[in-house]
Image (cartoon, rainbow, N blue to C red; front, side, top):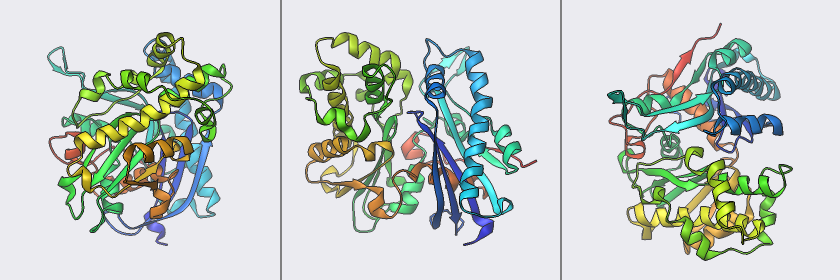
Length: 387
């Protein structure tokens, strides 16, 4: 292990379940060779999670709430970094940097112009100055904004890592991450970086989680092991109506978030389908996520018929009902998790932001213009020096 190449990657996704922290030893300049040294997840208490979700909702996300959460989450991210470092029993001074994705509270990649200038933006909170001060480690943050500044969607950002780590000279492979939102990277056989296709397919767990929260009056935040969906019925006619949403008419590059499929959308679904039992809506929402993936891949993947395998990461990979729906709706394409490729499905996104921090400090670009729509590759993030 090269101690001078140790990084911590921190990730909290759209589901706002908690913070994934990965301690990664990176062995080469590009970041394609690495070792996952330690990994931990710090779950948010339910009341903090609800405040985060409120900050993402235009109906409740006040400036005061977002400002407070920026400071509070900075401390939570710092604590998560310190904890994963301590778990590996290493000298904290050997960690070169922290790469913190932050917590997305608003994502407006297609906002157009306002006052005569572009208003496209994305906002992640979890104050990097707090992280750097509390850990004593330089911190790279705000990765998405630089891509947006050059005309990109700011998402997805993991495709470069997917390409560096998982491209195969003999297999036409796709990588799917299912967090709150689902995003896919397609890696053609033997293709270069400019051949990579990547985009947000649509909702991942966000609708499922919202329905479970309402069904249980807040006692549960997600469908553990897909148990609710497994005991319920999919309403295909309802699913088809949901697929008529304007988002699915957008061609890549495209990205989305809670602004489109969050709490207001879930409330509208419940009202619109008051005659459908909530467990059935949860099963239908799970199938909806899978069908949106399948239809998006068919529509926007060059040589879809040659696609050999799909490897899933994120919280969705732990839902057997979702995994079975993906397999059923993708037919002969082999569906598994990134565990099959040697990288923990739960740790993958946090590892990616450790590698992106490494690339930033080495002056290397971190975006894939063919995936985000950016005009050119850029070095991502803002660097907050160590104290």
